[in-house]
Image (cartoon, rainbow, N blue to C red):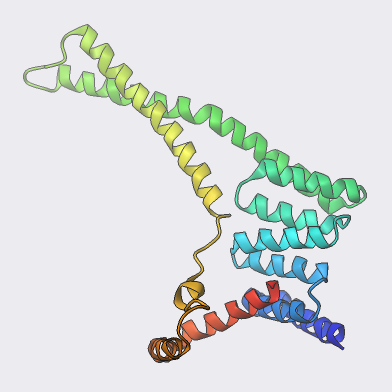
Length: 246
């Protein structure tokens, strides 16, 4: 009976995905997992729903759950690779896709995913090599223009010393080069942050298990009366998700 109910909920989730409603699909899959918590297909499908909702941490977590439940199923690794690709972790995505290909070498979609990821890795390498030179060149150009402006536009040039002129140009070139390095670092940090666990606001809002029950009821009723209806809806959906994972 439980598995039949889980199958019905899974179909509802699949229909929601086809209609572009990832949040609704997420709720259906979470309900289904409550009835059939060892079903790897449900975690895989919910991983897709989370991915479409840009909830990358949970999408990756569900992909890991699918792999844990069915380690020889290639689609679990494919789901993991899709999340990693989406957040720009192309090397990790390539490894996941290749693991999936080992399990199913005949899947053309996996080959396309590997080719797509290799192109992104190649593009990233070219960008990392060219960007510092480009930024450095822009810095040198700015330095040259500054020196020329001082010599030919200013009433009393202050950069007439050739050594100072060269130093100004070198400093601006170095600033441009350094800016490119900092920019690449920030891009990688931002990508990594996409897979960090989000703050669990519900845990912050809910009292601990050791608190006084009467105090809990008073606090809960007071907070509930102040919450807008949209927050209640999101809280209910997320609670369903958390129950499905337990």
